[in-house]
Image (cartoon, rainbow, N blue to C red; front, side, top):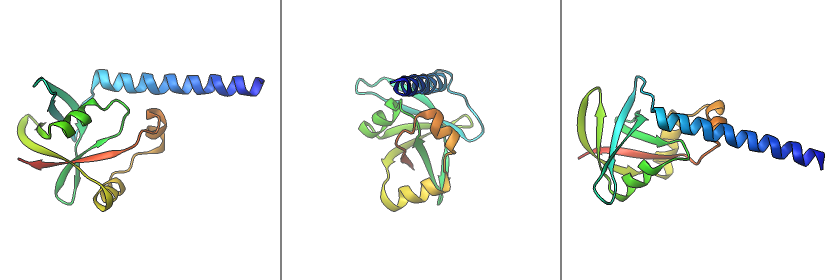
Length: 133
């Protein structure tokens, strides 16, 4: 019983760390070299901005879903007409969900480290290719 309590407390602490890390990232949306601002629209037409890392692979631009909060991802799938702002320049793109060999290639070229995976709670990782509209 004592071991179960210790495991339970450790699991609760881990969940709190993940929630805190994800919340801070979502709230602060830090921008670094290589980040972009993806503007998606919801079903009511309201625009939403999200700072993401732009990933280049085989001459294409991608963004990865690396976190549990992923409203932007669902909006991009529901309405693939998105806006990308990089270095102050905005362009229209079409968001395309990728799979299979293309997914494996991009994931292999842009791995996430184990510390990052631990801090984010091991969310499933998906990629969206951004094709110029």
